Amino acid sequence: MEELNNQIYGCKKCRLWQGAKHGVPGEGPLNAKVMFVGQNPGADEDESGRPFVGRAGKYLTKTLVEFGIKREEVFITNIVKHVSPKNRKPYDDEVRACLPYLVTQINMIKPEIIVLLGASAKETPRIEGIEYIQIIHPSAAMRFTKMREKFRQQIADLAKRLK
Ligand code: SF4
Image (cartoon, rainbow, N blue to C red; front, top):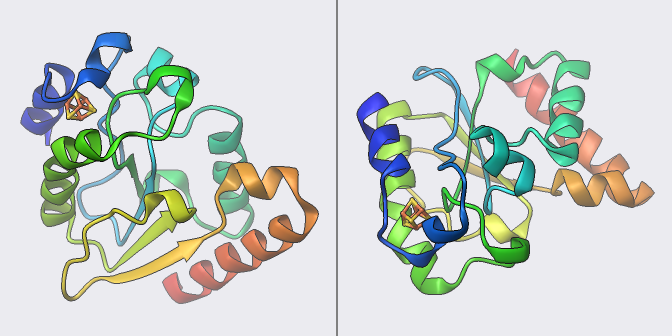
């Protein structure tokens, strides 16, 4: 994993590295049962080099803990590993260039469940034997009451399955 992370830090396979301070490979244990995948790192992630550490990430972590899932138990990453200008949606060619890193991470970790954070994570490659669950993105859950209720229920359901 360290070698893969170093490849990501030095990657220039698409244009996104140019505006980024840090590559954000993702983090979590190699034996994680669950992998969370978002779309792309934001400004806080770019600053720190860590995934989901901004407001939405903190909210996700807090909700996981509330339902008995420790953040250190899960692997968290994104489809593309560098921040995009003004946090725009990554272009198709950027996603295509970056996806091999995610495929390698999935093959290394072999999670039982991959949780797609919002519709924007839909490009995550489907690999046989893994269950895919799409949930509300934590940033939407923070903003809208109905989505928050559904998001919390989705995390509660996930927690039950992990017991
Ligand atoms: S976003 Fe992915 S493909 Fe593009 S430069 Fe970064 S690591 Fe490489």
